[in-house]
Amino acid sequence: MSDLGPVDPGHAADAAWLRRWRLRQVGDPHTTASSTLIAVVTDDGAPAMLKIARTEEEARGADLLAALDGHGAARMLRRDGEASLIERATGPANLVDLVRSGRDDEATHILCAAAAGFHAASAHVLDGDDPPLLIELRTWYRHLFAHADELTPLHRRGAEFAAVLLDDARDEVVLHGDLHHGNVLDFGDRGWLAIDPKGLLGERAFDYCNLLCNPSHERALAPGRLEHQLGIVVAEAGLERGRLARWLVSWCALSSTWFALDDDPAHAESAAAIGELALGLVE
Figure 1: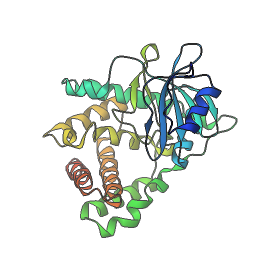
Figure 2: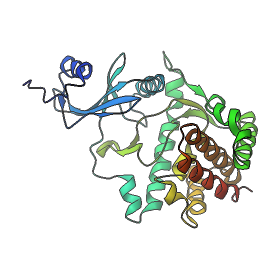
Figure 3: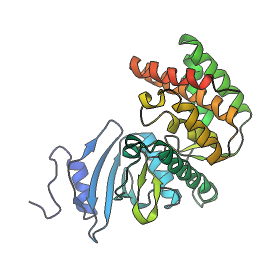
Figure 4: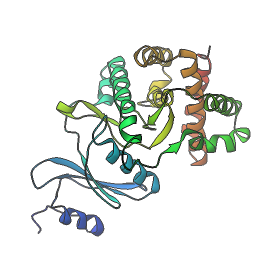
């Protein structure tokens, strides 16, 4: 057996990256339709994550991580084609566990601070020598615009809000695109940092919407929770309450559309239900 550790025989191509970069595998690989993740230790003992991108979206996220150079996000250690070696979080805290232990407000404060740190790196990314390809937020909403009329009044209202907000975009920054309790991790001395960005460009308020719908739809739908957490985000991020609420309605409509297109009616319904609650917060 190799001194690089056990390798799943079904991941021969991934094993080649382990050998090439002299990485020791820790635990089993985690494979999805979009990527393979393997926790590793480098030859100098540093914890890292080997990520093999399978889709254009994952490759774009890796490009953005490389451009961020550790500002507000996990640091890219090595990159070659589809393979990325990324700094691995080893801190003991976890935002999902924080919420479960009754510290929901604290988790939201941490997420807001992480979002601010990520957005603050926009100039570093956009003014770099080789800026990554970013997707305009209007393009991100294309499925909602295409399908809203065949879904529900909430979806149509969300599409209307999105069209107006996008035509009057403010505070445009590099967006994470999928900021939630599972994508901001404890990196110990480096603090709470983002992983797995989607690589978008648009109004910064958009990035706060997904965290309000997490760590689960059930939690987001708890009585009074959405209004309370939205108030924390407004105060922490310095956002206009009514405008954030409209972004939230549009995000819930978009998320629900994606679930509907993926033939997941339960999550499509619960995402829309959060949107209905958000609609009641629009001023």
